[in-house]
Amino acid sequence: MLKLTGLIPMLMLFIGINTVSGKTDSIPGLPQYANASLDPQLQQAFTALNARYLTRTERDIIHVLNLMRLDPPGFAEKVVKSYPDQTGDPDIRKSSYYKSLLRDLAAASPLPPLKPDEALFNYARCHATRSGLTGYVGHKRSKPCEETPIYGGECCQYGMEDALGVVMELLIDQNIPDLGHRKILMTGFTHIGVAMRPHKTYRVNTVLDLGILPRP
Image (cartoon, rainbow, N blue to C red; front, top):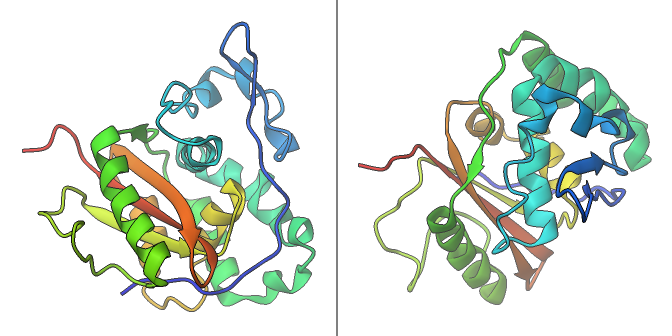
């Protein structure tokens, strides 16, 4: 079972959207990507712009994941190396999990960006909602969320309220020996559903369900 319990104070992340053109103009929370809309490669990251069934933060989670997938070594240099200072916790650099993330990203090949899928979102939303109401932590689903799984990989994160914090907690995977979250997010899934909902114990919980489409 995969779960994260570490809570790290984070700066808020917002993806800036041009309301006229619909294009991404900047990422204020990630100044390293301020010119993302001018880079043809990075433009591919913003697959969830028109997924209006998602909240702003849920869309941002997909966008940040895609920035990592499109250019893992660049993400390590531009984001991961500055992350400890952003959190105000430079001791993160001493973590063997953090160091291994830098190595894995430096050696990783680019992956296609994840596209949002409403069926995966609905599946993730059911689990996030039920977990939040009961204070549950984990992947075992209760009614009415126990239908046949439609996802190939699932990550659950607890306590982080901003997109960058959710993604970084899952990628660092502190105290998860098999690095299950990191492996899921850095493999060849094609689509994703993301749902962040209130949680009785941890304030919020976020469920990410990833799959390969078309489904059989």
